[in-house]
Image 1 (cartoon, one colour):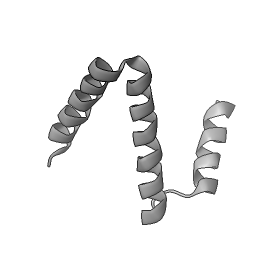
Image 2 (cartoon, rainbow, N blue to C red):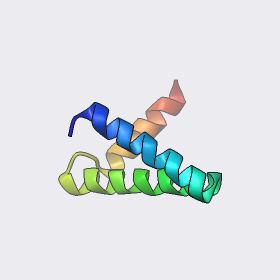
Image 3 (cartoon, rainbow, N blue to C red):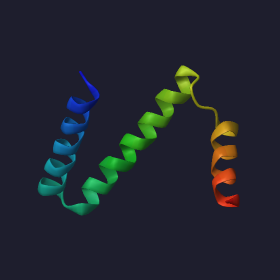
Image 4 (cartoon, rainbow, N blue to C red):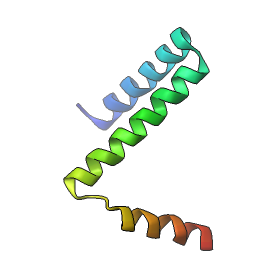
Length: 62
């Protein structure tokens, strides 16, 4: 699956959840997806908690 196809599918599913469950359900689905993405990145070793904290604190200093 290409990135464009994945983006289309994610957008379609988000709108479908929004239409069926409302804005709260759509926001919960986005939040759950972000948490899942971060967990997979951490398990794969692509993201660490200290590394993420450094990036967040660096952004706030600007």
